[in-house]
Image 1 (cartoon, rainbow, N blue to C red):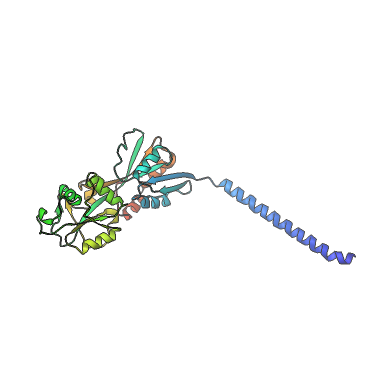
Image 2 (cartoon, helix red, strand yellow):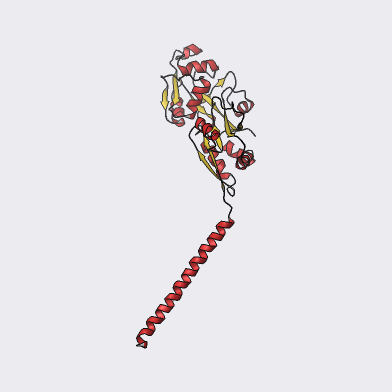
Length: 284
């Protein structure tokens, strides 16, 4: 009887020992993980939201920010929505890329200029003009002037090109350039900047626009002078070019430590190089 039970008993004892060893190892692993987590400081959450135009840039900046202490989330939704959210304390900073009525009426609102963008008006290399006034730009894009002859050019219709909404650039045109007047319904709408540039490259009587941020590295289109001022980084930085789009980060109330650290980071050489790589004009 003992002979029969002996091998089974030995087998059971061995596997009981093995199970105990596995249990001890699992317990040790769990305790080690708990100990490591307890020694790893919790990262402070930080939320930045607002302008969809600024989101790609801020996303890259956030990825290079201090991830040992902060967990930064970047969301779009529009400049106005960002301002409302920051005033209600649901986000830390708002991204603002166009004028928001009454933005700085509250003394607790703080603005931080991040970079400058702008709008260039572009034409075909053989277009009849190389410069326009702000008045003429408004008249062309509202449809008050529809023939190049009215501007000293040939008797040919002006083909206005526009980016189809939702487009932050088109919004800037309507709010800043056209002073909240609607763009002409005769405009030919395109989905992407590359489509607009291709259309203008194929039509000497077309006119369109492109933001500095979206300007292609290589293109045959001509950027118009406005009021005799060329479109360049120098004229944008100096403020001479009339169509400047200032990009702000906006805070409200007492600035948190996370906000202060992030604002200090965007003034660093590393952050300024990132801004320049996004075809924007750095201001620090």
